Image 1: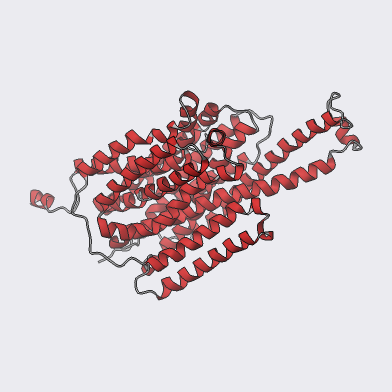
Image 2: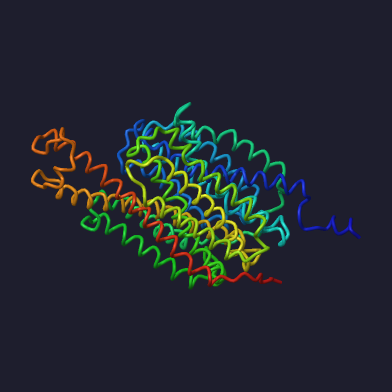
Length: 507
């Protein structure tokens, strides 16, 4: 009886399941590291490619934006080609794109290859989620997601550290070359462990809905990225991007509500748990990537940290995440997941509050403490929120739901990076203007606080003062950005109490 039951089990053997899980974790780590590893070496890439401050930001946002655009197609691609084939082709393309990024000689090549890298790497996370949910029985979903989630969450955290080390001892190009051997290993594991009979009945691709959604997302991203350099709505270009974005989203929503089979199944968006979790993961995407994107620049440009020290100083963030991921694997299924998420959000909010206390003369203790808190918090959020999101989703819609879930997180990440960059520009200029107005030769308070060798009546003294104002106003802009992320963390908390934790079975 036992042997018969084992032979007809819908799940793979323990050994095969372990190999598949290892392969999926490795693929997930590849794409999550690739999304953040360039953060630490942006100054080196800018110097090597001759990019402007606006252009260099596209090294980060182009990767995320490409993933956002491609993600809605993953459900259709899975039906058309099968999960195994989709992963193998994506890994091959991702490897080639990574190598091309390492060989790029100008910013246009770099952005093009980052687009390809982001588009192909976008396949890994949603397909991995769906595969793991299918190869594990329901009672092991929490444990499986916890193990896999280490790769999904640790990647963005160890990326900056690894990038700093590679740039210091080798060259910034190695942050891309390192993907090659790891991709080959993941390819081999997937090719040898995943079954081949996965292709499903073909369905019509909703190209109209895909184009409308893509237009909305791309228009929004272009508006956010180009706004600061084009004086925002004083420029017809920005109005054009806004119009494209609003029109694209409007057409997509109307089409989704009226089309027979839209690119995102309507039943997914009718699931309260999933929609609430998707809203929350949007803000989690902002919290995960926006702070990590600006912290290395702050440390190198204002605090004078070398690139290696910048990466290593963020190690507590990775350690905190690793610890919390180990803990959360034991807690999911044994206590209310909403309480776990609440603890994680609270720790994340605390970390950004601590970061809003940064100063120009501080040591690295506050950076280390805030990083540890943030790592602990994010590790406690990711897995239980994902488990709650898929509690009431039908099994046949898991890949599609996972794709949309990843899409929302990537949109949050991309918008978060752009918003924080925008806040820094606006707040930096505002603070610089206020300080310059205050720091005049006829202000006795300013004169009394300056060293004797700085004379504001001379050109040299004014130059020194301008440099001091520039540094202080830039720091205030960073602090305002961290305070914004602190408030974003608090916004998530009320949504927790609307989530359901009881599993709904599907016949």
